[in-house]
Length: 256
Image 1 (cartoon, rainbow, N blue to C red):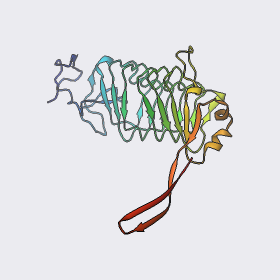
Image 2: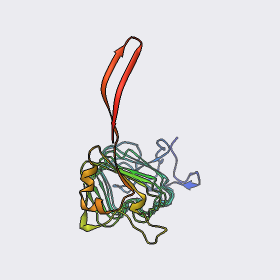
Image 3: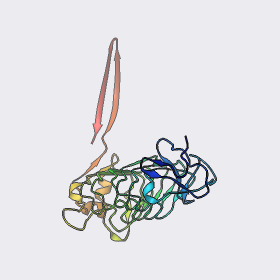
Image 4: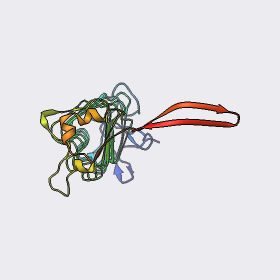
């Protein structure tokens, strides 16, 4: 049942600009359109319907719909936000979009995102930055996160010069693609305000595709970064299959 203006639910008081009923939750999340600045009355719409006024602290779980871009500062300092689900059409997360969402731990449906702006996920609690199709990442995009352990960015081409993993002391695994990305301006990936807070290349294993280790080692930035190790994916190749009555023998070889 939809929630009406003035009702209290889970400690939150819902307020309406236009009157009437507020939208139902979808899979436990509020359907939110950052491009229109408010909550939508349906989970998947092409045009903005009635808009409802919620304070930043009221946004605890957002289903992002009806937009290709999450605007800059759209969810900045939404301290109660823990979960976000992106629509399939979303391609860009602008600067500071989720900065200061100190309880944000979960994000899903990241496959369409191609651009992540500066400080977009700064000071959150996400543990894995998995963005399979992102091409460009801005400065400090994942900085100030003591919980971040890994990032998978196989299609990234350009990373801004200020460290995107600044003050991420738990960071230990980075997966990149066939082409070493450009780190603009001779910048860095790691660092921190103090030794205890810093992310360090010496603690990070760099994972690259099969047969690409030598390419990364020949690229100045990655050769001199001081990674704990550069490891290429192990591919299992089946050389021969011998079929006998009642028996299947497979001779396989793994490439390092």
